[in-house]
Amino acid sequence: MAYELAQVNVGRLVAPLTSPQLKDFVDALDPVNALADAAPGFVWRMQTEDGNATAIRAFEWDAGTSAGIIVNMSTWRSVEDLAAYVYSGEHRAVLKRRREWFERMPEAFTALWWVPEGHRPGTDEAEDRIRHLRAHGPTPYAFTFRETFPPGGAVPEPGQADWFCKA
Image (cartoon, rainbow, N blue to C red; front, side):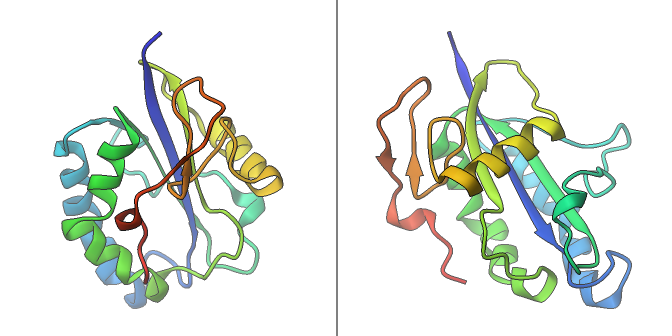
């Protein structure tokens, strides 16, 4: 069976998306998403019919006292392809500024897992993977860049040092 890597990441907004504080983030969304769409190994990303990912409602149970939750979910050919996109170029520049726009989250906010090729995960599936990762740590069911698992594998593999943003 062929697999694709699913990823979800969530963020707790420090202000509404329409606020001046988030203007730079909102302005970067379309260009950064276009880079992802064109990146080697990119397969799919969750968005509404009009192409708006910020309109997706999920993880509302995790909002806390934030201004709301924003969700990003996509599928990729491999962990290496996703990491190459996430930790390089324009996306990395935006990632370094995340503390301006998102609350610090002490618990897991990103989860990776393998899905059958062509499967498009939904928000319920993503919420389940984040909850599992928070409760059990990295497992083949839900893992992170720091500790990855091969498709169908139970033996963890360490992530590469350049896969971690120090911001």
